[in-house]
Length: 358
Ligand code: IPM
Ligand code: MG
Image (tube, rainbow, N blue to C red):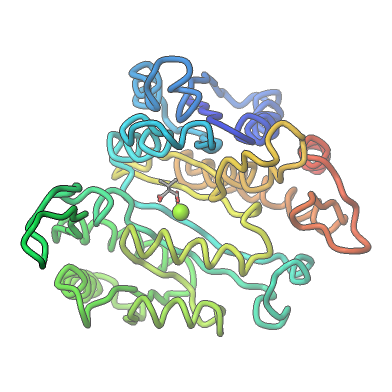
């Protein structure tokens, strides 16, 4: 199993270091794991003038899976758009055809206190958002900023993007989502804005067509504005959600807060052949970078997802997730999830606690 390791920027290298400890343990037990690191994001720009250097893309293409930290930082915000760290992330998703983004939100009962919602609303929450990741307004053409005639005669600037989905793009992510729903609670909610957008109208139609292949799954439909409201009001009504790129971006950030901290949530981005890129949902947190206080659990849980989805080794995935559950039950907390009466630990201490349980 060849894993491309892309630590990225900010807290990326610190949290990746903890996840690598987990992989080292597994390797020590005899698992064949090959690790190779490369620069991405701001680190890629610093090293090679490109947020996705050719060598990094090649490494990622040749690997079975990619483990990514996070990208971005204030020192890169004034660069031209194509050179910005975020562009490196979007390009690697597109180049590797990672169209299905799995973002679970679950809340360990011990962390209910850390959520900003009432404990009874979120305790034992377990939902999965399947976000389409390589289409939509993120990639649709045309896009740009240009001069066009304004209302008073002269020209003015207009900015525009195109929300675009082909039925084949919708269908392939639908199959992933129905497949996941089959293994979970057999309830799938498709989120769109079909009351306003043609793109969403097609999305909904294709979901209904694909549903015929999965008669056991109960498919429902929800407009994205209502879904945002329902996620906060009664999140446990959802089992699996499937949605487009931009709606999924927004809803998954909202869902992450249900689980106490965005520092807890892993993600997987998969292609047609189960190759995947695995990364925490959170960003590079430049304000706390280099201080050894970030929460490494989302990254460690991303390694668990790697075993589940790319290596089809759910025993190892369960074992890693179990170790994380135990450190939470034992009271270890990084700053983002700390509450009175629990043990405040650093990023590396949290990593060590997971290793001990593993
Ligand atoms: C995410 C992030 C990215 C996105 C950014 C950093 C480009 O917000 O992974 O959710 O919008 O997809
Ligand atoms: Mg986002």
